Length: 167
Image 1: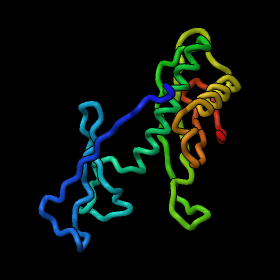
Image 2: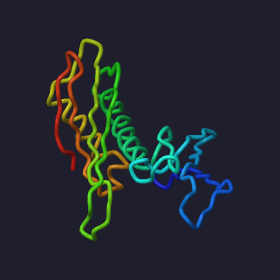
Image 3: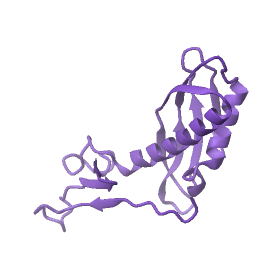
Image 4: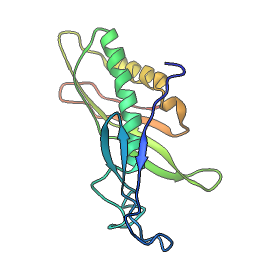
């Protein structure tokens, strides 16, 4: 774990577009372990056709990475506690704010996990809150950023709700 290296390769080409006037495509590829993922600047920042709405933008990837890290720890701690998670689905939302230097940054990422449990042993609302808290405390990515990461989990049918800010 400590000292492990994680790599990503980013590939962009001009493809003959004029560069100096800013009329070049922001579409590019992220390459991970033999998988190519279409990426682009967000259409919220760079208009189409210079951005690709169907591609993943860095802000979306940031939200997904935080959500994925939180989920992986949640699953680990739930299993250790003897709970069976049947399904975990999260719709995270990142919000751009302005920091104390006047720079735009992802100020908040709100996770909204929908978790379905199976089996006889089901966690209480307090146990779910503790699983989220421990997951946030151990998430490598949450420990790497200044972004406020919050959980506003709506309950899955038959499940308890959890809502709170993780800090």
